[in-house]
Length: 34
Image (cartoon, rainbow, N blue to C red; front, side, top):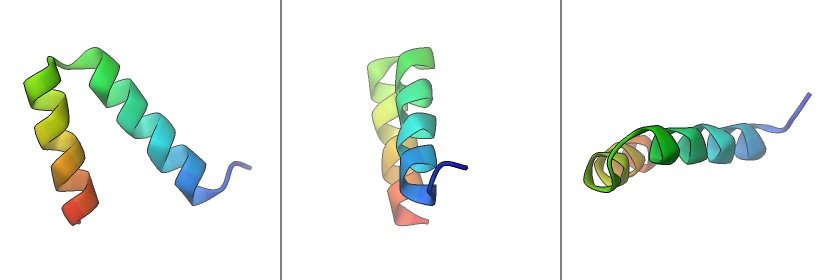
């Protein structure tokens, strides 16, 4: 099983690819803030 850091990075990469750049950046900032 992948470690949590790798999984989190992959999730962020998928979000960034799926969402517009501005939305992806905002979502990434919220994930980092949680």
